[in-house]
Image (cartoon, rainbow, N blue to C red; front, top):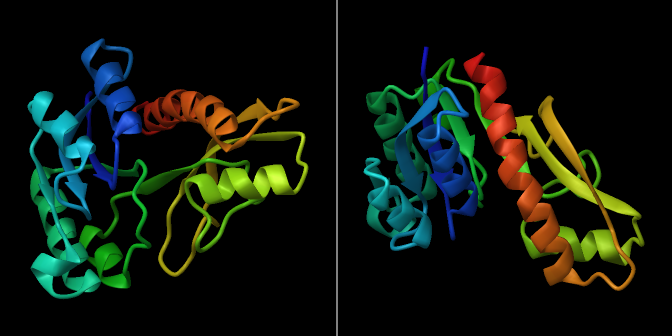
Length: 195
């Protein structure tokens, strides 16, 4: 059975591309049925369109508030038939109303660190890698975890992958190695729900 997946994005969409590629080559028994973004015109939406996947932007500017934008996003995901929602570089915290609308559909997020370290509100993107390097950590990594209302980066771990911090690493070099593992981890995590 093929798992119907909805993906939330905010930027480049490289994790989305990893998911699309794994679906296309048959290594992931899933199908992306909808891609939603909180930003208009981002490369991730272009990737979705190229793959023939329905997609749309749900911006605060267009809907008036973040809650209204996310309610509309949730409605679109429910209409698409998504049975799993994946936050793949989505940089907004989901509102309580979003969770109500998607009801029992599980939600997972990919985070560029080994949670519970370097997680929480405001810890995304390069900020995470800066914090890892500033702490002198010997390793970083990727965590794919469940997402629940009123929490940030506290859900149950689905998949973790470790990345060694190398001497001389800076944010771009560490970020690139972590991102490569994100692409693998997100596909592995979706596979656990498709099993």
